Image 1 (cartoon, rainbow, N blue to C red):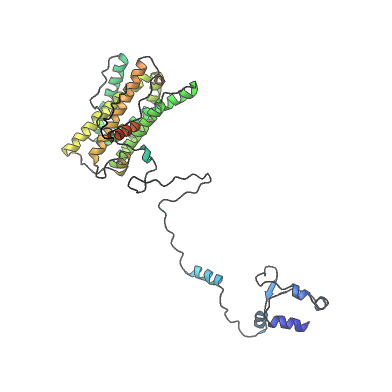
Image 2 (cartoon, one colour):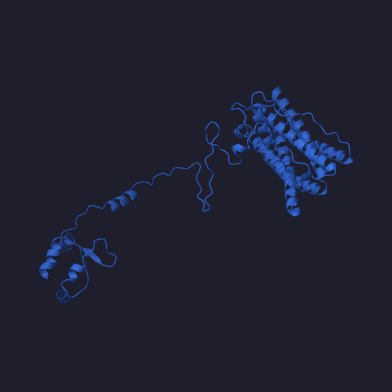
Length: 366
């Protein structure tokens, strides 16, 4: 037994040392072979080999043994500074629901940078639209709507004067409200009566979205001051609730008011263009969001942006006067199909105009 134990220890084989008696070992000589385990099983017992026994029995100071690769890695990690983490510009947010947007590119192959609108929402504005149209107020309600808009213009002229950039910003915060209110109320009416809207819900909501994009463009050009932001908060709160009540009481008056508001917007943007042409306002480069949204050339300027926005306002003017005429005839909006959305109309005109020998159709809103 002693020879077997000595041979195992001298050969450096791993063994597990338990507390057992010599008599038990002699009685069971096969127990020694059963206790040979790999050296890394040392959680509940002490593993050792011949070299370890020699170090324990020696009186010399223990020599530094070469560190294992894992230990060297740990020591190196403690001494060396932590690696710098690279900042990811567009981090991918992992979602349990598996929702992610595919990579979208422009026509030239560059990455689409916007999340607020997609390439399918972009269009080229129809700048050939008639800007001189005006609805003559004939009935009493028409005159009330017309005078109301003219009265609202007085404090605006006093406050902004010739600062048409700030004026346009304030105008767009108001102009984006009617489409949302009208679309929301028509949506609830459609659900309540179990009937279709004739496409007017989508038409009015697209109008609100288009006006919001006007505002996002103007914010890129004009940085509002703190008191102008406060004015926007107050005006939006008052106008939303007032227009909400007006639309509930008389949709025909509400749409007529919006039609006259859009006529005033056309006038304001026309004066804006005059100041740009005269040099009173610098014709700065167009912001990137406007270039992508209206498909403007890369070298587009502020004048190009104001021109396409004015064309949008002219379209909104026609749509709202048309909606008011439907109500004045004693009908509901769903009885008259909504005009094609401005984006679809502009894209259709662009597609037809690109066909050789085919004239672009004249689309009437009435």
